[in-house]
Length: 238
Image (cartoon, rainbow, N blue to C red; front, side):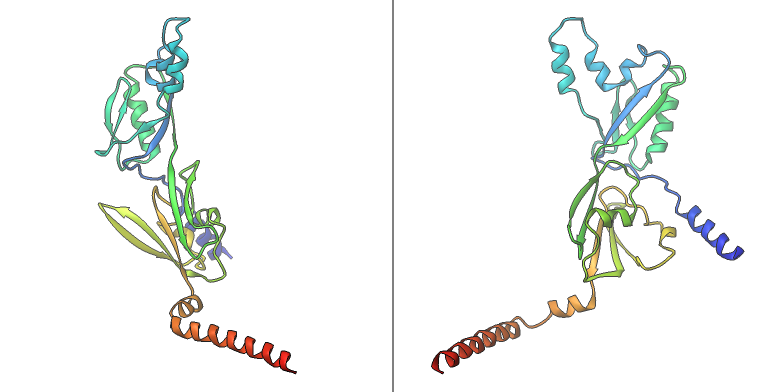
């Protein structure tokens, strides 16, 4: 009993979510708050576009055309008001939050930063009911949740061979997960990363049926039609 409890606690500890690593093209919603609401305005995109002379018609237009978030550029930098360009590629959002709060302390008293990813995209393909690309409102997505977005596996999905394709260090790497393994929560690939592809392989039955000679299938179909016509003729001639 004690051994089982210790093993479970160890698995839960190993499965702690560390956060998705930021990549180029990520779109982030970043909000800065502090005690002095006026002093914090220059550090927020939306409030910056609203700072103007009262009564100006441009206020509404500016608010409507304000950027919806911060985009990480192709070099891995994020351009932040006042602070300038900050290299963020490879950081988790928790690390970026800490970094921004430290930088902001030279301008604000007790700043607080909240970050939300607006375009966390994953793709689920193969033997699933609804293959496609999905956008999650949170970056904390497990492989089971990703599978659930696609409606679960079909009857021909192989739960022991589910592949994750992940872009790492400039190249695509593939990892195989066994969804029947009780220790899957301890896998470093249990949580999806931005732009991951989850591919469910077909089982042996589906593979064998896919490899059947198409001419053989055609022959069976023609044979079935001939037999059907023969049955009709025999019935009519009686």
